[in-house]
Length: 233
Image 1 (spheres, rainbow, N blue to C red):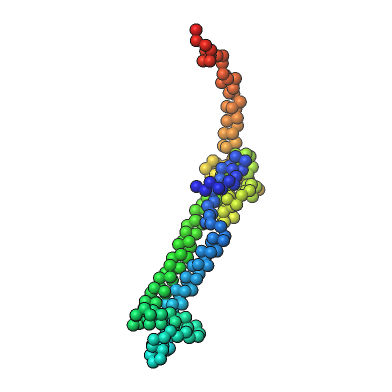
Image 2: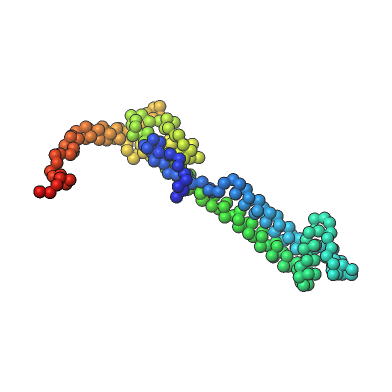
């Protein structure tokens, strides 16, 4: 899926690991730019929505008397909203642009910002669950490999975990994996907390005997029946 990821997660080729997916392939600068842009949208939309719903005493005077046809910039927190209201009211020909400002400059950017934050948040939760399942699966593979390497005595704390891809949040995950495998294979627990996997040990010994009994020389190539490169008679 991600060809640029060249990290070796095979532990020397003995334990292939499931990949832990990153949340995003964007660099930090791009993520920071997106967050700043969305933060500005959030502040902008919140400001105009709040102002459009507030009772502003200076709106009426700005549309009467000597100010009726002029754009007036006032100070304070409400000043920018007053000026924008006048731009749409006096120059845009709207009798009362409050509703338009509340929707176009308030609700729309605010909704966009909330969606922008909500989608990654929901995706992050789903990705965290999938990655945790992958870590558990990777730990099981490492644990099973440890059992195959030394079925005589395996302790949960002795299972070698060299990659974060095999470190789930559950601190007892290795113990649970060994217990499940022990229940399936009929392993015997010892007083020191280790397990002796007799059936797996016996299967390994039988497999070794079978391999030792194979005569590899019988699979070697024999003599040449005919030479395809020889000239035809």
